[in-house]
Every structure is written in structure tokens, then in C-alpha cells.
Image 1 (cartoon, rainbow, N blue to C red):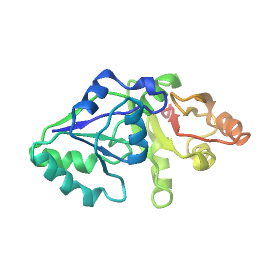
Image 2: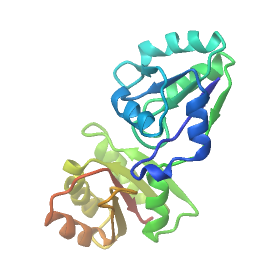
Image 3: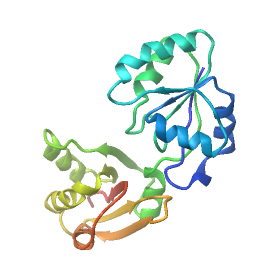
Image 4: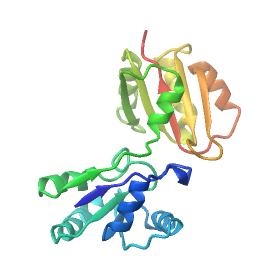
Length: 221
């Protein structure tokens, strides 16, 4: 059986009692970064064999993991932070397990875009999760699509590309489109800034931006 186990995106208190129980019960843990996951397990007094599973090796790692699961072993899939397969490795393994008739159980838990969306104050009854935009090919086309949507859009972005994204949103959505940027959610330096695209661009142009970033964009009115 494969358990998909979300891990804290910041504050370690965000881990659930169920997640800790599963991590203690499984035979091995499949980790995006074995060093980070190893530190997490040690923090909670858990010792388990770790199997590396990341973007660079996931195609090659699926079959060996499937073979272990078919022998009756239980595994927990974790990412560096948050819920696996949401802009993190995991989809290929989950799909392969389903195809092979291996049971998959996904625990509820931390995911960065949910608290960012709710805290934004923008409508969240209907929204599109876009994930990361491509760096080059197709980027402008996707920005045009985002700008035309009538409901809220959630985008992930890295710190060194945030200003570029805000400049592009100003072109495609207009400077007065409401938006919100959530940074370092559930961490010591958490920051949530609300305003128009132009106001956000002005704010973040005056500071060094670090950490994981979620951008919430209001729909076209």
C-alpha cells in the first residue's frame, strides 16, 4: 500500500497525528530529498529507510518502488514540504500504483495555495490552480489565458522571477487588477500583501524577496 503523506510547509506543528502514525507504521519512506525528510523524521523520533524520488530520477525509480510494494510492503510518499504531486514529484508513482492495483491512500494536510487563497480575501468559491508558469515557451499565451478568466487564479512563483511576473500581469491584466502575494506561509517571516497589481509591484520592487511565493489574481470583471 502507498500512503501519500503531506508534510509541514513551515511550522512543524502543522503535521497531523495521523501522518505521524503512518510514518511510524510504514516499511519505508519515499522522499524527494532524503536529507530534508531524514531531518523531519528524526525531529519526531522516527527511523525508517529512505528511498530517493525526485524530478531527476522519478521515471527510473517507479518500477523498483512498485516491485517493493507488490511484495506486500507499505510505503509513505513525502515531498520536501506540503502535499506530494502538487507541483512536486508523485504523480507518476501514484498513477503506476493505481494501474498495478496497489492501494493508494492520500492523507489531508498542508498545501501552500489553500491558506494563501483563503487569506487573500479574493473569491475562492471558484478558482483555477495554475501552478508554475513556463519560463519561456508558452508563457505569454498562458498569461493571456489567466488574464481572461472570470474567476480567481492561483500561481506559484520563485523569488527571483516575482517582479517579472508582476510586470507581465500589469501588461495583461492591467495595473488595477486586485491581487495578493503570500510568502513564507506558516514560517517565521510569513507575509501576505494585498492590493492591485501595480501596488504589489511597487511594494516588492523596494525589498529583497525570499521564500516560497503564491500569487493570487482576481478574475476579470
